[in-house]
Length: 115
Image (cartoon, rainbow, N blue to C red; front, side):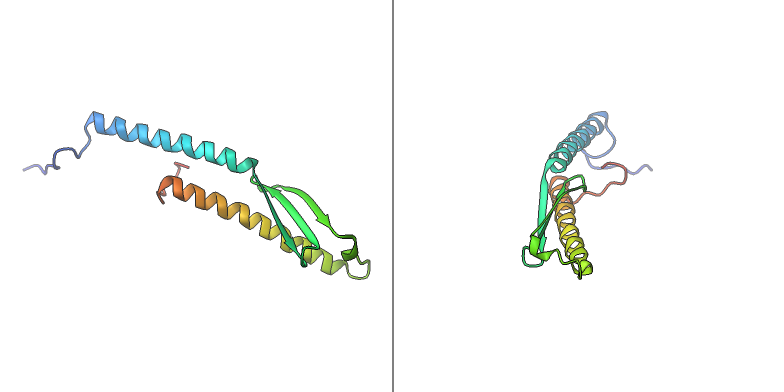
């Protein structure tokens, strides 16, 4: 005796084509969203606004701005710490937005190799 799936389920050609179209549409939407997010810029500050770092959605450093009063030749370590803190926060913001937007678009679907 063969097991049968309820009507509307199974591997009919129409169902598979519909599923393939949905997957293709999802991939196109995700590609468009990825492109949009790559063009965005994210900024973060540290040291009470003394250092501002801007990164792109491509996770590339775009600019570092700092107030002149934080440039102390005697304390370069503090300056580098503030730059790293601001850069990491900006990169985290870019990554978090990308992950959240992709999850919203895919409904949490995680198919290896699809995205």
